[in-house]
Image 1 (spheres, each protein chain N blue to C red):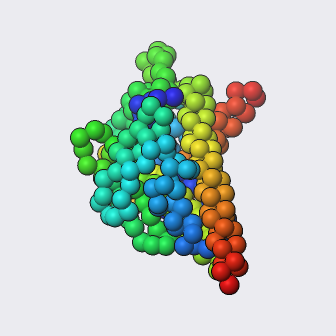
Image 2 (cartoon, rainbow over the protein chains, first blue to last red):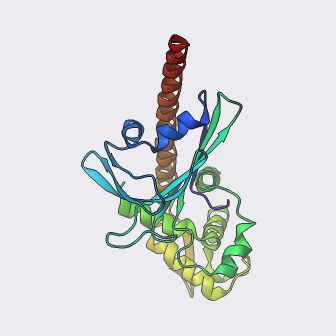
Length: 148
Length: 118
């Protein structure tokens, strides 16, 4: 998917069901993510994540055990999160045999804001580069140009 | 960096055509809107719109030279955005590392339990 902001992955030496529980059960989630987690694993369910003195609401989007889980957060207060006003966090779990799981997380959003469908499609194919790579490359090019 | 600033940064570079404009400015230094318009597959008006958005987010600055307006990239802001992106990625790496430790510990625990039971 082009235009993703963050795209990270890891290989875990545990079956996919175990990894699924780790990323979806609130008492587990509070150990790797937020200090306080209120989460019901159902599409459309509203929850809350607290980080120290900060926090915010989340809305669960896709629940497809044990391979796909996503939620939206960082949206304006009082609004329902949709594509364009929020960030989407997506977990994809891929079993590699019985004892191993490949876990991928992407965080994306705001891409769809303010540009028309035709334009989106035209550029989607040309811009496979992630945002991190894009910015790193620009910083490198700029530094070279300025020193040269 | 506040969430507000992040939002401004990401919105400014979310649009791929805006990224193309930024890319051209980084690669070519100080140039005018017409020069840019000759190198992108969209209209002069679209270029102007993108320049306004990039300038508002602090990515570029403008200066008048004779009758022309020239635009150039603000290296500091670009650095800041790249660092913010790297921080976000690092945050997710930490979280994934924690998920790995938790899941592997839970798995090891249940295997020990299985052996005891069996």
